[in-house]
Image (cartoon, rainbow, N blue to C red; front, side, top):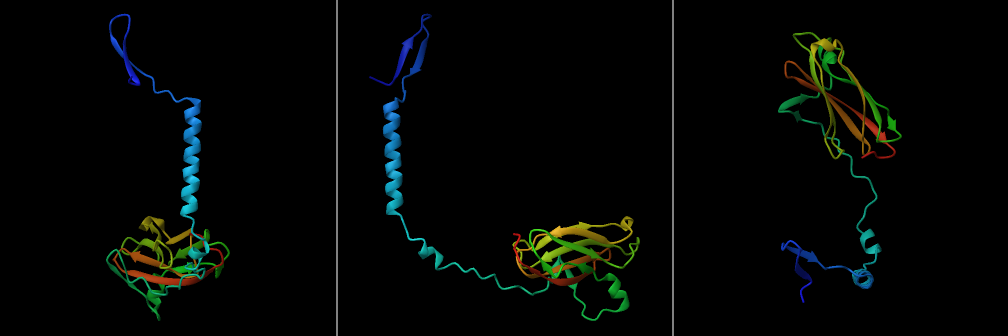
Length: 187
């Protein structure tokens, strides 16, 4: 006899009734069987955990010390001995020498160049080559800001050079970087 039976109601309309009811006994049998199969499979597939631990290195990754060469197709200028005019354009970075927690590292960046309609700081970029994501943040500015100054917090995974790039309205990009030592990684 089929588990799905068809019966006729009083008005002659055919209705299907589902008799697939799970009894308490069936539920207990299936639960015990599933548990036994799970335990059996886990004991068969049991691999000593020390075999996985042999390939794990607890040493931090080697710090990358490269410079960001281009951003948005524009070449970044890294100037070792800047002139007086270039000193106004190069971003100044304020970071702690040692960050106790890499999850919240305060950073301040500014340029001494006044924001004018003819030449103004368009965008600040914060980069870190040792983070999973190179670009940590970008901040757009206009001549109406008056002063090019940003203060925020960033996440750092390990000791690294934080690089700040300043893109101006004439499409020139100047860069500066500063070393930060991180005691506890934040990524």
